Image 1 (cartoon, rainbow, N blue to C red):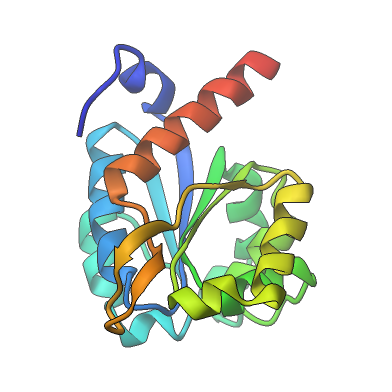
Image 2: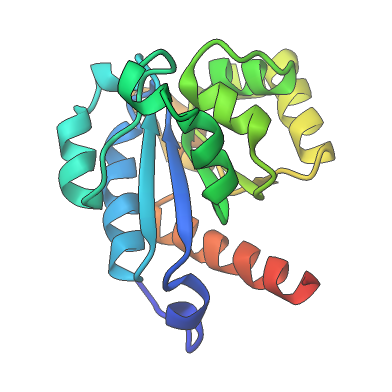
Length: 195
């Protein structure tokens, strides 16, 4: 990853929630977490139940050195309203991959799991890294949901064009982790200037 002169000062000590949703691009989220940790970020991973079908929570726990959050109804985590604590403490949220299902839930304020609930509570900036089949990404409903979130101030990186896991070619590849880290740095730099 190419580092800019300011990357350590902008990212070091920041608390970032990485939301991981259920798509094959989850494997790239492991590298994203690793790169953020290298930059001195305090990373907290929140996984949907579908994400756990692709990558185990243990992987993210080992990479982030923090407990992985995955259950809105966990008696231990939620005894102190863990979803609110996580949401309030975040400097930024990154959803990578952001699936079509997640975009639909977020665009309509649906809070049926831990990640979607945190998204509705947080006041931190949100960065989406969409990843899905090219035809799914081009679907008018998906585009409408994405545009609605952009209109609400959410930021987006990607998706990129290329070979997809499903065998198709086109837009839908989750951006490479180093590009997402660059987008995180840019977003935090802009947020810092506004204060």
